[in-house]
Image 1 (cartoon, protein in one colour):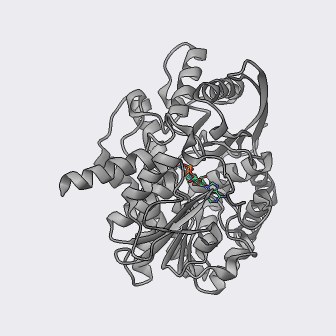
Image 2 (cartoon, rainbow, N blue to C red):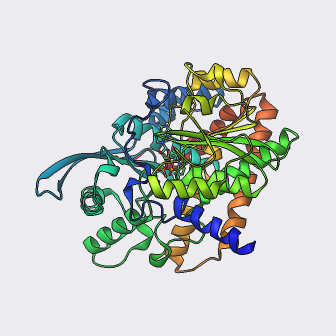
Length: 453
Ligand code: NAD
């Protein structure tokens, strides 16, 4: 029995864990006949600014501080010439946006995706600022992205792209300046190339320039599933507040990558019944609960959850509309919009992805008393353990996995209840309460530092 469990765990770890797409990019292949993103075009920057305006109206923030908060501190737009395997040169467009440096160096993921835009990077960098402030981590927010289709590129092409990107944005990177981490379609191997390129350029090893690295070069124990662990910590507390338990609850997870895959696995470990999962090609459903070993094995074989044996096929739209206790959007932003929010039946929505619910759709969910765990709280576990990794690198210390998990859980639970308390005191929904706590901390930092010159 125990050997069966360890086989299941090792397959899940391979499919959803640090090794995912380490050597094999076909895993989440092109959406051959797949579905388009839900809900049509969503302007994430407009949504982020409207969220900021809403809380600024509730906080005593001076206009001169609000105008600073609305604008990213630095935006770097780079053209990346890359030698392709066929000998041709292709120029990719890349970005690095640092929204705030007021509470510490900038921190944020690097995304490889055809849909990357500068506005999206600005919005996600701003979200990172709020997220770090909410969990009281001494960073500002950043985000980077390259417009590309990684599943159509070889490992060599991805390596050359990553090294060129690192070199081009290197002027604003550094352990005291800006520290990237994995995000959509990037992984520990890509972080290793960033670390190596930056180190080669400065002439010595600088592991602390990037987080989410392989353990062998300074990565932290517990980083690979940290975001999902944080998501689970907040879901468990949300269940407590709602008078239910995660064990026995039903769950549907959109996205089967690092975050979604590990949320499904950890929730199953805690006794939840994960009935559906999806990726960009479509989804699978089993009312009795998915066999995650089969799902993980299917991902490793075909690059998608689709066609997992013993499951019915469903679309992403059908997954979002399932009658489950907990819905976990863990793919991209702008998934739940005014076009489909009426179909959502779950009593709890855990925003594991960044900005998966538009502000208008979220108001509909709040009006229906759906418990929405806002992204800046729900998925803050990733940046929290990234911070642990940076701290360990700077101090040349190695923490044990159980210490990482314990500290992560404490930070997530503490932040969760500060948000709940403020929400109760002021009669606010959790998004507004979380944003108030975060924006207030950043505004106070700006005020304390004053304006230079
Ligand atoms: P990933 O690349 O590992 O996985 C993304 C998953 O989403 C894949 O299964 C992909 O097929 C699926 N997907 C993509 N487009 C889709 C679509 N249109 N419909 C349905 N599924 C789709 O990425 P990840 O690291 O798991 O990140 C997922 C989300 O979590 C992103 O919003 C990311 O910004 C956020 N996030 C990630 C971390 C982290 O540590 N990785 C931390 C905080 C937040």
